[in-house]
Image (cartoon, rainbow, N blue to C red; front, side, top):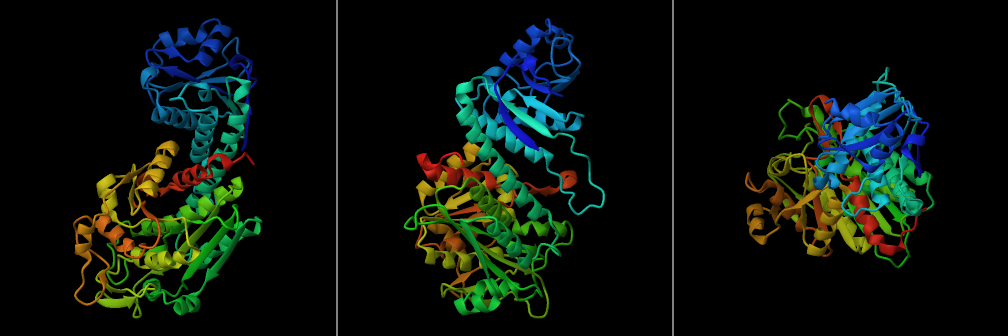
Length: 501
């Protein structure tokens, strides 16, 4: 889809659809007022007839309104004007995107981007609009012989109220498109079935990104290399599968050679049956999503590579399947991690932390500025936070706050949970240095406490995305989160050094 920015009057847009905002009690936004005046008060009359109040999630499509140059006018409810904040703006964009895509319009001009939103710049508003329209356009139908529905929208134009805002808007356009592309890649990888998206397939997709870039290099370590490194925890998970494990390393060098890198670690269990501690069969197909941490990290690398951010970022993706067979790890087995710490495997379904701990130890060799791991780690996080926020735990408060701020700015929110030493008591083992589970209580926290044992030598944060990485039901599919959060965090690390590509 072609996306562009434009400065102009709504009534003069020769478009298939012009999108305008309406606040509660039928109050027209500034752009809607201009259109109403040009149409001889036609919009006001239609609203007074009771077709629309202006509440959130309301929309009304009007056709062939005399006085306008467009074929359609899409009125979108924005709620109460005094409550029109970041969240309300995003909801209005989502409502507009869904209504627009259901119409026959092949092009549209969006004037919601001219609305005032909590002192945000045009760039931020443009970026949000792009991310939301592209998210709405995505269809997980690339393996279907017949596609779900035809994508009629071919051109999307975003309005700015003043030509002086064009520079900010263009940067927002670049950022929004890059994040949308990264999120779409993460969703595509996440939605692929386990028989296609294997550890080898993930490595191949990462390598494809590197072939298109001068700043990104990718390599994948195989089983023998991991054995040489002593990655006994990671390899213990892979024992029950015929698919070879991979440790994918993506090295993006956009900064100075002397700059310390930020390391992103993504859990890449391409299918999780639970191993010998097998999961219930109901909804087990959704365990293809246990590699969404890896997918989001790869998607983020695609986004920063597109933007050519002036940073050094390394992504580490430990990847394997967790399946039961005669060679699979058993409850009670003791394995030795790359760090030398021994682990009693009390539950083979707590496997994500076993592959992550070796990846965290491996990350130490890069002398990182910070390490952030991303994982669909615990069902307990879904119970604690639901589907709205991912769990955040960290050994460094400044790093944690930076991620929280990035989540707020991007709309891809996180919520911090405690990482107190008292919880470490639950991981005691009579036979090894540490057990891989800590009982039913505080499951998300004890999982992070396990990872903290392997992150003592660097600033580290853990994002548990089990509740946000995918949704079930009739809209089943990967969400692409937290690509937006991670990308925003990395953008923030650039400070004033980032210039529009």
